[in-house]
Length: 204
Image 1 (tube, rainbow, N blue to C red):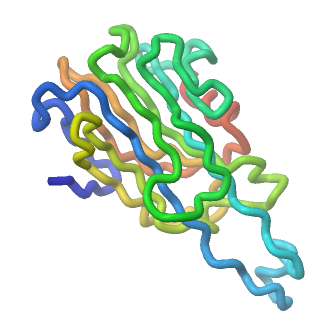
Image 2 (image 1 turned 90 degrees about the vertical axis):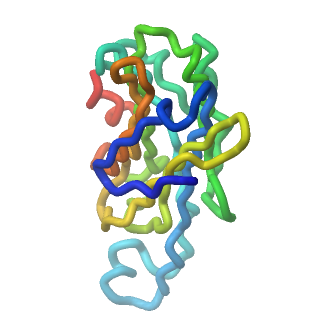
Image 3 (image 1 turned 30 degrees about the vertical axis):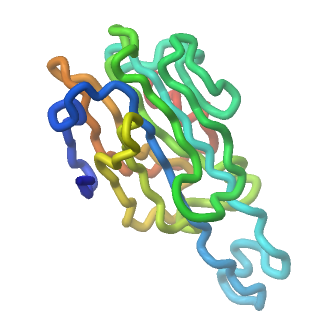
């Protein structure tokens, strides 16, 4: 049965799922309904009169050694879909977030992740957020969930419920090793980073 997580909560993935090896990290979000174009504060802020561009959220995985990002090749994202170790694979970019279910997925082979990597941080940033005047306050129903790839059973899910207005990037959660176990931490931390490059520098 899937565990519904609260912000800051940690859960063991290994303990309740004997023989767990490969997981699917699913991320989803919906665009808030368009603002009306008829004057007013929101119209002035977001530029009334024309329909907003779709919000393109990009999920990425940062693979850390001793809690640090030491090489840009350890960033798995739409421009580098497969980690050099073969253990973390991005399933491709979704440009709009429309539709139900996962919008983007990252598959992690926990059993084969090289020992020197102790943490995999799952982040999402809005593509060209600053240029498009977009932020996470314009997104709703955002979630991260972890699925056992053997049987497609959802192990845990974290729904982001806070108000993230003004935030252009998000640290969704962390998959990490602790005393020989793989665990997951629901982070839900918004940032003002304009892109993945700036966001990833937080972990250097």
